[in-house]
Length: 192
Image (cartoon, rainbow, N blue to C red):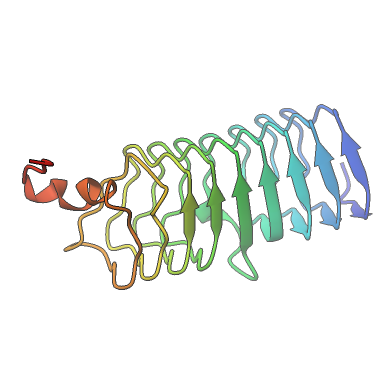
């Protein structure tokens, strides 16, 4: 299929599963209830696009450009965001499932994760400074050599962060979240 360009279009309840959308260019498009499961989005460009209620499980993102893209109530399991084009990479996630995805060494400065499932997500070497994890589940998410400066973890839960292996200056945590910061030291926390 030849590369195509789409401007200000809405795609509703379409099935692009296991299809190749390589090299397509989408500008200000909305995808609602679209199934992309297993699709190849390599070299595709998404600029100012919105994905709502879409399934993007196991899509290929090699050199895919995500520029000012939001994902709302989407299933994004097992995605290698670290293989995306870095130029103007800017994403937001709300009420989405990103379990087992990878952001290895990805620049995610000021990204918003709102009410997301981020179980076993790889954040090693990423720049997450100024990022917000509002109401998000970070169970077994991997933080190693990660820039977490001025991140907001106040309503995040199930995280485990080693402050000696990550940059945490100015990061915000709730009292309940302190357990996730000190468990690496094998200390006991109690209210009495």
